[in-house]
Length: 220
Length: 216
Image (tube, each protein chain N blue to C red):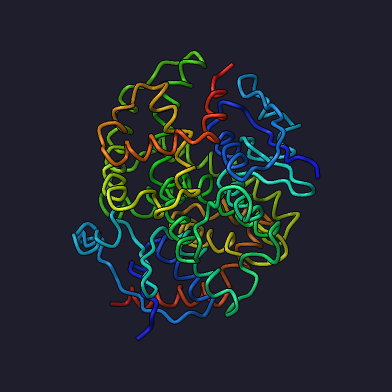
């Protein structure tokens, strides 16, 4: 039985963010689904692990850890010597730039993109009325952010520098939904360097595996 | 060695987060004023440093770095071994520091900063406080603080029995909530959150920075 357990549904962007890192580092894991529709994440058993009632949660031996971006950092550090090397950069300065783009993802890329994904991909599925004015606002915001990314990626192959890192990895889940499920894929595909970067990072084995797992899960 | 340059504003929560960390690590720095009230952060000179047009940005030799939470993680690692240890002593402790840093960034900061923005900043720009937005965010923050209360009843600081980046990240916004927004009861009504707040806000490294947190 794998020592590392990851609790969460694959469809959750935060869960797939953590899983992508486990796959990149070739860490043996067990993915334990959490049924959000049934409110499993708000039940006492789950809250005992994660008091905010959110997915995912990682258990590695005695350590219980939540917040996907913290999980990503921990896995990248603990398993530094195996799987994809250099996810945290090769120097303190490289790591700093990677952390900068992790924070940009967390504070600036995630809010508008998450909003658009929820409103355009999930609200219709769940019968929740859409907020058109806010959709327009967030699309404008997200576009401005992507313009900065376009400039950055015209000067640097990956966000943190010449190599794929946890900064790029962090962007995979939201961007996948934007491109595949919102009808707004041109936000990514119309930008030459952002598009090239997206094509590159989403064709990595780790992300291909997650796509396969999602397909298999949806066939139930 | 040249002092680290911090381009920022003395009353900006993100800027003072970095200044407090520099104090904790006993690192010399120079604060280069980016005058937010006159829109200096959106001018080409500053955008050349930080294309997102937000403060702070630091320059440490050849390295230019922005995002306050990334900056403090860099400082904590670069100056490990001097000043206060801010990352715990083991990989697992460090992981818990990152976890609570993320909680601050994802769950505490959005509602807290919205409240501060509505009560303090919006009127300064000639607008009026959206009371409904304040109420909604206060409700959100109450739920988060209830969880903090439970955590801090079992642990002296957020990540464990040691002060860390996770606690430090909470200083700026909470300072404004308590001292400038009339929302001190959010903290004082919770026994363990209150004790934690009293402790961390009385650190001399913080007080030095807090006394300059005035706009204009």
